[in-house]
Length: 326
Ligand code: AMP
Ligand code: ZN
Ligand code: ZN
Image (cartoon, rainbow, N blue to C red; front, side, top):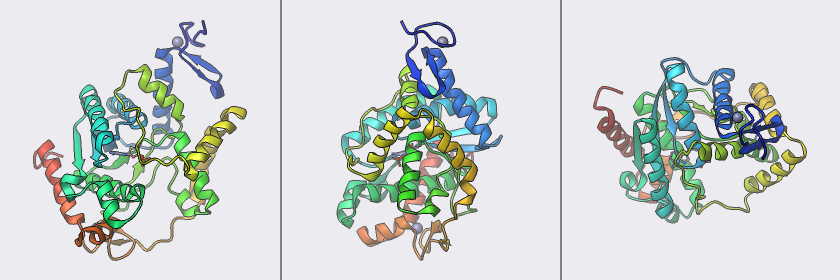
C-alpha cells in the first residue's frame, strides 16, 4: 500500500512536483490551502466583498465554489453563484442538476440565467442564425451575462474556475499568436472598470486540473464529468494542453513555475489598446458603438438585446433577494 506522506494512511493521490503522496483528507486540505494561499498572495478578495461565483457544473468551478464557501467565513466575504443555461440540450440540463445539488450542499444563493428564456433563442440557435461557430457565440453570451449579473447584483468581483493547466495553455496560445495584450488579462485577477465591467479573479490559478478532479472526487462534490459536445479536440488550445502534460511529466512543476513568474510579470505585458466606450444600447463595456452581445443579437434577431437581458437578470435577482436586499 502506498502511504500518505503526512499521516501514513492509504494514499489516493501522488503529486509529483511537490513529491507528496496524499490520503483523502490531506489531499483535500492541500487543494484548499492552495486556494487560500492564492487569495492571500494575489490579494483576490477583500473583507466585506460580494463575490459572484460562475459555476458551470464542471469539476473546476465546483471545486471553486466548495472551497470559496469554506473560506468565505474566515475571510468574511459573501458569495452568490451564477449558472448560465446555454441551452445545449442534455449537457445543459445535466450540468444544471449538478449545480443545483452543489448550491444546496454549500448553502449558496443561486441565480440561473436561461439564455433561451431571456433572448428567445439558445446559444446553438443564435450560432446557426448568425452562421458563427457555437463556441464564439457562447463566449460572447457568457461574458456578457457574467458581467451584467455582477453589475446588477452590485458584486465586487467575479470568480472563475480556470485552473493552472487552462491558463498556461491560453498564455502559450496567445504567445504563439503574439497577442501580448491578451496575456495581460490572464493573470490571477483583472481590475474593475467603473460602471462598465467588473473585475475577475481566478482562485484556482495554482491548482492543476488533475488536482481539481481529485478534489471533487475525494470531497464527493457534485459535478458533471461530461465535456461540452462542442469542444474541439483539434484546436490549438487542446493540443497545447496535451503537449504541456508531456512537458510537465519530464519537468515536474514547470507549469506552476511559469504561472508564478507570469503573475509577477503581468504588468509588463501591454494593456490592450482598445478605445473603451459605453454600449449605445445597453450601457455596458464596448469597443465601438455597440457591445459584442448587442452587435450579435442585432445581427441575429434585428434588435440589440442587451437592455432586455439586463432587465431579465434584474428580475431574477429581485426574485432571489427581494427588491432592496442585494
Ligand atoms: P470556459 O469559458 O468554458 O473555459 O469556462 C471558464 C469559467 O467560466 C468556468 O470555470 C466557470 O467559472 C465559468 N463558466 C463557464 N460556463 C459557465 C456556465 N454555463 N455558467 C456559469 N459559469 C460558467
Ligand atoms: Zn494523510
Ligand atoms: Zn450592449
